[in-house]
Length: 422
Image (cartoon, rainbow, N blue to C red):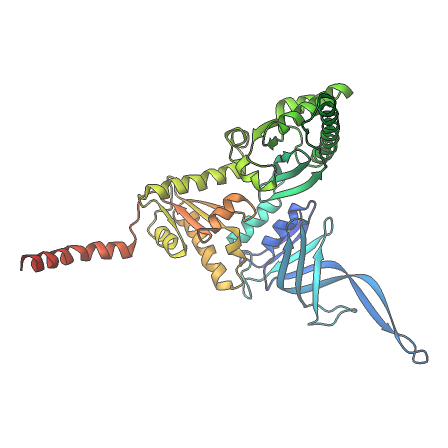
């Protein structure tokens, strides 16, 4: 996402003009735009005109117009990266009346202007500013490509800082190697091998087109890990096929990429559901250790390890985390607040402000670390299963209810002993 213009005052009111350049930018726009914001963008609208009184009837044409709407709701389709923003027209326009409902479809390579007012809404609070900085960060991009496959079926997935997207699916019928006589078995093997080669060729062409796109864009293509995963030996065979094709055509760059960037791992199935299993394998985590995805996955693993220890240094839930932060337990020296980005899309302004205050208190008052996890990643989905917020503490914090029960227990025990002695 390219920042065209920024005008934000000290009261956290103001506007920014942004230019989305790639599909993932729509995800960032979805997280930036909130109900009550003002959105200005170009749209295509059908305009009806009355014909002359003698002939009667109407005629309609589709024209490009620039509309400003007060946002009421948003709809984001992750697989296609389409963002639809609905609201009421809030600025005069010769073609559309004030107050009319309209849906703006944000498009790649078309500027849009987002205005936030701190008095009527949340404004550009600390979380919104952080989301904006992340959206326009030029270093942001793809972190890995993963191909989960079996014979005749493959899913090519793109792992970014905020999403895991299935970019391509390749399906081809590959007959099995049927048992039978020597001649029949040889024929079946030949048919099988030809079909498998055809499948590998289609998959390689799609994968290389995708990697070439990264080379041409700002995303790094060379050095980007390419994970090949399958049950059995299919992934290894595919890697060998690509390497042999690179040698055959004399493509030295592809030979180097296969040797340095391709990683083969085993998984339990060839469906895309095995992707989480693939990304957790030691071979893959070793290659992704410096990525945002790996760091957030490591923090969630650390949280669950501490939760199993039950030593009071892992808390989850709104009230529990707020109490821990208020006591200074999520501060310097290892304190981490893990929070889902979905919580900042709360419809109620007061609820969002509550989460923003919690984030600000951890960062500014106690000096702790805050990680906003995307619900489109496995780590974010794990966090959502805990209510969307969790914390790793620097020291144990007792639950108030447990403390009260422990305080009452000696009296209860004494009472029980008196009854028994009687």
